Length: 302
Image 1 (cartoon, one colour):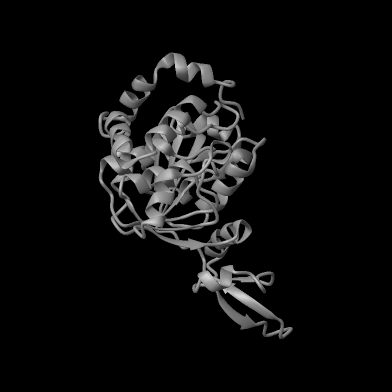
Image 2 (spheres, rainbow, N blue to C red):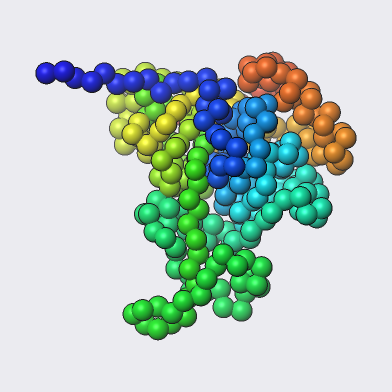
């Protein structure tokens, strides 16, 4: 009997970013200023991707830097900002200038949109939007009467991303991805994102052997059949935090926000940290080992 050999899904960051096409609907994992796949985002910018739509839940520097680099045409989410650090300057500037389409959704419904895609629903029902200004500014939400109760409700369109990209802790070369048992909102939402799309790219802190994966089968929340590609990218969430592994680089975020005050100074930031490096490893060299180690919380734990 011929047994088909499993194919490795381990590819480079450049190869993974090339899987995203101009005009795609892209879901970027993480939440706020936590655990975004920033190494992947930087590579999208280097490859000059255009006309992307980011569909998200709560976004931060992932959307802001893509906006400033001219990669986006539309954003569908509940929030774009830097939480304790303040507003998202590139995003706000582009929206005020009419250069970026935005479509607002409540945070909970932003999550539910991915649940709708996960279940292959054509919409997600909501019953709590009456009297909300959201209905005035978001024409994609449609009213209907429940066929069982007659109660008025609203149909919220699914997220329907073309590509999902998340950053995780550990995975093997076949795309089996471990998620720690002790996890917070970003990791839980990443799992939902990974189930909402047929093209899922995962960057991980470390590639481990399949034997190690088999020792923790209960932690394989994203199995190999769900992943299209896996990339090893240590410190791949920098300057955001990787929960349970390293903290956010607050100093670098402040440096970013200072640079983003104007298009001219922001271009200098891109030239130094994105266009000025050939790879993620060169980016890490620029940040510096001392800085990276100062952020370390613990060794990768399950």
